[in-house]
Image (cartoon, rainbow, N blue to C red):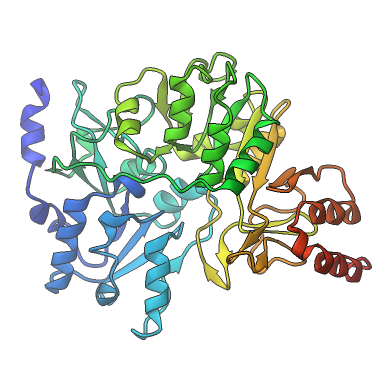
Amino acid sequence: MGPYAEAYAARRMAAEAAVGLIPSGSRIAMGLGVSQPPALLRALARRAEAGQVGDLSLYYLLAFANAAPLLRSDLRHRVRPVSLFHGGLERALDKEAGSHDLPVVDFIPTAFSQAPHVLSRQVDVDVLLTTVAPMDSDGCFSLGTNTDYALAVSQSARQVILEVNPAMPRVLGNCRIPLDRVTALVENPVPLLEVPPARIRDNDRTIGHLIADLVGDGACLQMGIGALPDAVCAALHDRRHMGIHTELMTPGLAELMRLGAVDNSRKAIHAGRTVFTFAMGDRALYDFLDGNPDCEAQPVDYVNNPAVIARNDTVVSVNATLEVDLQGACNSECLAGWQYSAAGGQLDFVRGASASKGGKSIIACHSTAAGGTASRIVPRLTGPVTTPRNDVQYVATEFGVVNLRGLTLAERARALIGIAHPDFREGLERAAHAAARGC
């Protein structure tokens, strides 16, 4: 540690002591997904259980298992979760809310690109809790899998409490926290949380091949979360000279680099390097990122900025949705009246890809849901508009791909009905005919 040894030692402490520095009433941001620090969150949960701290607000995106000890219904009187992107934990808490006479989890609608601004300026977070790689020779800690909003919060929060884990990859890029910004350090050498891939079904493979037919050599890729984007990656192994500029780095994208399909040689910015803002997957992905000079992490307000995305040519953006209406608008975040996920970076990349020279924005979904009993192409959305009809370009299901750009409302309805499941086409045609006289 050289010249930083004394300062490091002064900040090093047990998890209980570190969270003991957090006063009641604090606004806390925890890292996203893989970076959520298990020792710190368990210690904070124990402190809340003991009645030693309360009136805490916990802000975050996408809680994983490491956050479960703190995100519990029985702690809601002391810890208020505030989600910017729902996942399984939030959906479970929302289901429990009624029986515990509790409100559903608080939710802030926002684009992922705005999360740093929301947390560091509008919410004005007091404390950052996140996992980092061990300190480097410059006295800095790499944020590893999760630069996203954590870098901005680390620069504005009054307390920065880090869990140092040698399993966290040391990633290159604009993703480091200097020791002099750190309030407390807790060392916890445990395996990083791994995220198993979603099961790729036959429909996913069909859609993956349909989308892959739109992707040529030299394309710059952004892939979202789930089986559909994974299936697209699997269908691109024979391409060459592709690039990656994506919010999420996945095992599927890493495999394209290993196979030589991606070399980033044709990118206009960050040429030769894959750019991402967060990563999740298996241990092989984390090892791939560790010290890899061909990869760099950047904050999400840079990576997801449509003007930055558009600086690369032939950007291809692939994201999933929950439903598409007959005018082309997409709801990608609410299901059956409940917050299911969030907008994330979908619209950021839809607009960035659309503004890219030769770019293509693709929204994909299975044609049906609920075991085939419901159509994902619907007359009217049942939730909020995540991606407006004005922005949607390509829509893909297992029954085909349509380009809505330049089509009238009637032409859009016919095109979308053509890729709906056959069992629902007649009903959709009746709905389109009934709606033909107005919005």
